[in-house]
Image (cartoon, rainbow, N blue to C red):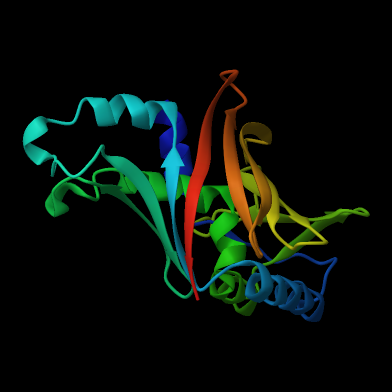
Length: 221
């Protein structure tokens, strides 16, 4: 598990690398589609509870002296367009609220924030580091390399963008040409907003996975 988390940290801030099939104008059009749908389907900000079995175990082990007594501790995502995501723990003393902040990389790794917060995708396009991989009736797939590497080698990621809602449904990360971890994102409508309700991170080389569930959205305009 520790090795997988290190891989997530390496790739969590990944940006797309230049390719030759789609032109920059084509990629700008992809961005425009993402931005249009994000305006329609993602609020300016929201909070939501993030549920995971490992979180449950860790929350039960929190020492009593850091609890506020105002309710059971809960892990929450705070999201704002232009800012991104922050993970906090509610109902514990403020100086400990960011104890789970390392899991923000999981959320970024899944690709969800790249389309909910389109400025992140725009920065990628403007840097001329986007590569078209393939397309079918439902998806456009983008290939990405580690921005710290000088070469486009066998360590890369594939992001599958749904062409109707323009969200990233799947992200697959490769190490030495072999897929080692995959994020599968599930969405549905909550009121007027098309939001994630489940992320599954599948560790392909270990035949194990982590599931993160989103509960009790609170939206703001």
